[in-house]
Image (cartoon, helix red, strand yellow):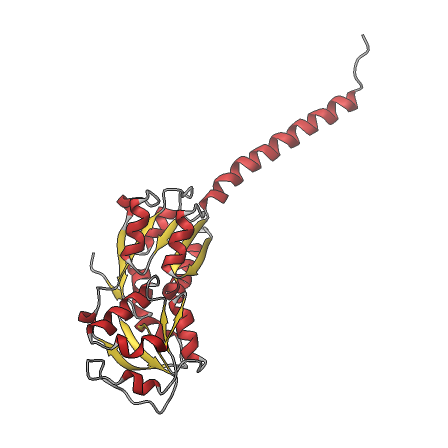
Amino acid sequence: MNAKPRHVSAQKSRLRHLLAFLCACLCLASPLRAEAVTVFAAASLKDALEEIGEAFTAREAVPVTFSFAGSSVLARQIGLGAPADLFISASGLWMDALEQDGAIDPESRINLVGNSLVLITADPDLPEVAFSADLDLAGLLDGGKLAMGLVQAVPAGIYGKEALDYYGLWEDVADKVAQSDNVRASLALVATGEAPMGIVYATDARAEPRVRVIAAIPPESHAPILYPAALTTRSTSSAASAFLRSLTEPAAQAVLKRHGFVVIAR
């Protein structure tokens, strides 16, 4: 029997070691990839969550990816199987719908923060007003549009219409409302002057220097504005629960408060 050349055996040995090394690297890399966290969150949370996410990544070496949009859009995407680990909605209604469909983990659900509504403008000449039944909102619009989220789907739009109905103002402005698919889009319409006024969250008004608040909308005029957060049942990230937990810790709560959100006592 002819013996194999020594250099061939050595080469095979090196190949075996290389394959073993690559397999080990893949085994180590897989958990790291699984550690990434994908968060679907209401557009109004964008500035605060990006700041919190950067701090979490720096501390835990876990990347956090955000998808910001209207809560209704995000809820539909999650319901259709979008790969979200965590959902933070601006309305309990959309979270309830996903919970009923088994798309979120109800045991993980918390109310993260609260918010309030304001009437804004970019016009320096418009006066501050009281948001009440006596407000001539249609007159203030002077033929222009009132920017709002979709009043049948976007939480800010739903809350805003509730407030307008509460004071009997909706019928006067219904045909003057420019509806957007998220609250940041409504904010942009006012900031760029395309709409003379808009109804947005107080936190959005704080985030945009081109607009100013001309009226606070009384909270009794609409349902409480709460932001529920929960893990999805499709989540494969072992770090998602850690990120959710971090949102309730003092450092993250301080960021949310600084951006104007109402911190909920635990």
